[in-house]
Image (cartoon, rainbow, N blue to C red; front, side):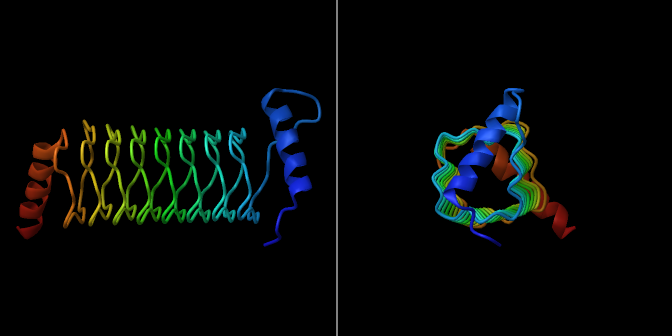
Length: 203
């Protein structure tokens, strides 16, 4: 994995913006397996960019537009994606341990099998997000919008789900010990579903 020089990254971003605007000389950003550790990409437009398997540890992506981007298998440990647009993005299998996704738009995002241990998802929009098999141990989802999200097989041990908003949540074979759901608007619903699943598994 080669460290991407700042000049090269700037050129890639310029071409990508031209591509997004249908301008001559435009080209979609291909950053597969790129080393972008610690880069400052705050506010940048990376819609539909290909960042598969990229190293984005400690990267500043505050308010960046990553909607529809491919970040599958990426290393985003401790990256700051707060306030960013990740709607429809592919983050499946990604490592987002301790990443800051607070206030971000992850509606319709693919987070299947993602590692979100201790991630900050406070106030995040996770409507219709695919979180199947995701590891959310210790994650802070306080005030997050999880309506229509699929959390089947997700690990929610020690996760903070206080004051979350959820309708039509999909729960199946979840690990939910020590989940903090005090004051959650779906407290009764989630407890009843977990209880039903536990009884069914005992049969």
